[in-house]
Length: 286
Ligand SMILES: C[S@@+](CC[C@H](N)C(=O)[O-])C[C@H]1O[C@@H](n2cnc3c(N)ncnc32)[C@H](O)[C@@H]1O
Image (tube, rainbow, N blue to C red):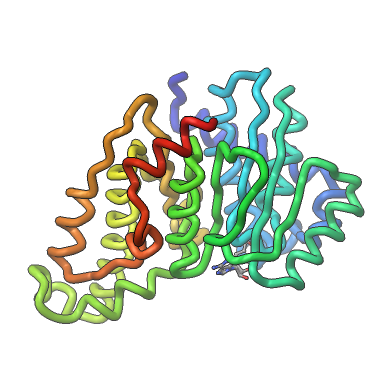
C-alpha cells in the first residue's frame, strides 16, 4: 500500500487521538498528556505514537486469522506495549500476545499491577536480561523503544536468534562506539572533534546494527518516528526477515567494523553459534 507523507501524519494523529480518548489507559500508565508540549510525559507519548504508527504498517499486511506475538525488550513501564495492545485490539481482529522483558524487578511488578488493573489477559511480563529471556511462544515482532546502550544490541541478537519476522528498534544512547573512535581509522580528522565524534558514533552504530541485520537475512529500512525537535533519539531500524533467504553473510558488517576498529558488541552474542545452521534449524520449527 502506498502512503503519502500527509497520510502518515494523519495516521499518527488518529493514533494519538485514539489513545488520548482512553482515559482509563492513560491513568493506569500515569501518563499526563495534557501537560505543556515538551513535558516528559508528552514526549514519551509522542514517541509511543510514532512507534505505533510504524507497527500499524506491518499489521496492515498481516493475515487477520494469524496470531501476532510481540516481545518488548527493555519494556520499562511498557507504555509502548500497553498502547499497541489497545490500538490493535480496537482496529484489528487479529489475536495478539505481548511479552515484556526488563531486568528491573520493580518495573516488572508495576507492569503486572497495570495489567491487572486494566483486566488484560494477553500480556506477560518477565524479569530477565533481554538476551536470557525464553518466551514459550514463537515471536513475530521484537520491539524496543530506547533500550539503553547495548540493550538495543541484545534486542537485535535476541530477535535474530528467535527468528523474529520483524525487529523494530528505536535505539537510545550509543556509548560503546564513541570511546573507540579516536585513532587509527580513516575518518580520524573528522572524529577528532568531540561534537562530530558524538554524532558520527551514532551514525556508525546504527549502520553497524543495520549491516548485521542484513547479514543475518533481514531487509532493513531506517525511518524517523518523530521529528528531531521532539527527540534526537528518533531513528527506528525496521528489519524484516527475508523469505526463503537462508544464506547469511557478515561481509558488509565486517568491513565496516574493521574500517573503524570498533570491535562492535553485536557479534559477541553469537560466539559458538553457527548462524547458518542454528537459525535455519530454528526457523524450520516455526
Ligand atoms: C530508557 S528505559 C526505556 C524503557 C521503555 N522502553 C520506555 O520507552 O519507556 C530503558 C530500560 O531498559 C532496561 N534495561 C537496560 N538494559 C537491559 C537489559 N540488558 N535487559 C533487560 N532490561 C534492560 C532498564 O531497566 C530500563 O527499564
